[in-house]
Image (cartoon, rainbow, N blue to C red; front, side, top):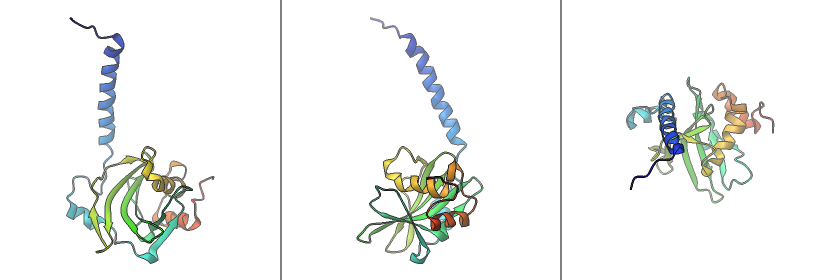
Length: 179
């Protein structure tokens, strides 16, 4: 017995395929100069020094944050593609900490982890997953959402320099943000 496809399916399937192709094309124009087609040894040479306690600036990660969050002021950079990169330390009440080197693309509200820190050797380890993730769709990225919204991407723009980012962190909010 033959089944006829409903007209909506005949229309929707080509539309879904076209959207998928468009999404792939749009994503291909966004690549990261830090790790695009580079091996780990090359990427390591681009990583900042491991965070030092005297360079850490604490920021408010929101009312539900259970950890304290810090940015290493010495690690902040803004590249020509308007990606802001930084080292972040997340610390528990007991003093245990996680260290990561990440980037935020303000224009698309995405975050990418490049490396995680090894606290014993004070060195960087390649992140298991290193791809752009939407800040709004991943529950665990609350600290990065707050960082983007109130410090690094005021009103959807990217800070113009590491010094501007440091001033925003020290002030507790970027001056362009209306709370």
